[in-house]
Length: 443
Image (cartoon, rainbow, N blue to C red; front, top):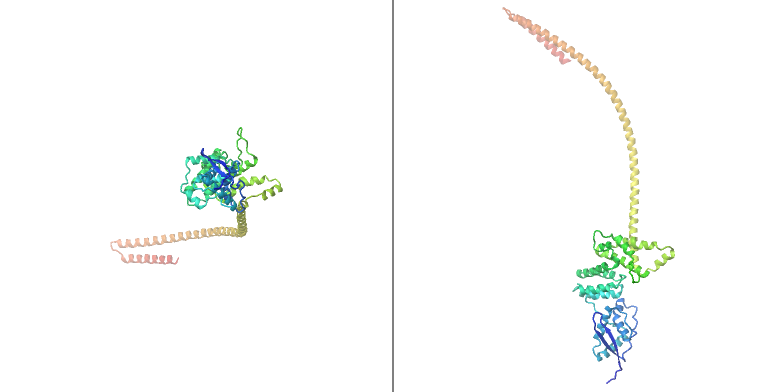
């Protein structure tokens, strides 16, 4: 039977309890205080998942851990499960040594609840996070945060004074499809964190987050966040200039992401808003070519700049196209205006000619009217004269006929009627009337 050297002890304290777990590590176990450096191909997620192993190694070597209580809780759970008996300690030591030699297989905490995922995101301290489909499905089974979990997470979020994490959580919520409850729960948590942060404490900003009618506009709210300065509190050290700038940038970017998620702003609108409130004022502070060159060559994420420049370039192309179209339309309108002016001049000439003709016609018509009036007066005079003549003649003719008929009637009234006289007189009257009728027909 082998004789083992004296054992070393490591004390691990759970984050949310008063338990103390003592782990016995054999003296002959390999030295794990200096773990192998991860390769460049390892993702940032693997680095964060390896934190429990690093905590165990530091405490095995007698060094204090720098992990947060949340990470220490996960680490203590890993260590307590691997150190139940002395024989298990030897097997654990040999297993860790084998993993160290193999350079892979670091312990990793499984994420099964929304609280664990949010804790994991805050452990990343603002680095990009994502949800794998398997983890997303597991969390979606019960996405609700109870009061105790929400209280613990808000206490954790209070330590993120620079608002480095909420934007990453909000971006993750926008990627969730098929699980509206999970998406809403994550978005509501971020909204709660925003409302509780001092940067959003102003009434106008609170109203903007709650979509109240008296709230600040999106432009004014973003400008207020981009120039936010914390109120000096007695006994509390003010933020450094770099931290204040990071806070202002994080708050503005978080609010822009919130506008896209809760108000449906598209990329073009957000780019224009950020350019007006954040980017353009920052660019105006670059006083010389050297500072401008420094700013251009210190861009850390070219994709964002490329996206913004692409949108503005597209807008410039569209504006140029619209300008060219407007110029073409202006040229066409000028040509049409010139043609219209030519037609107008021609119409004016024709109008003047017609006006002259009309004036001449009026003069000639007036002269003709005067002449016709004279002729009409003459004709009327002649007609009146003829009428008088005709009237006199007819009167005379009728008077003669009446006189002759009276004579004939007198002859008939005698005691011895003389019919031949009456007949003679009647014949004379008839002949005279016939002659007058013939004259009237001829006239």
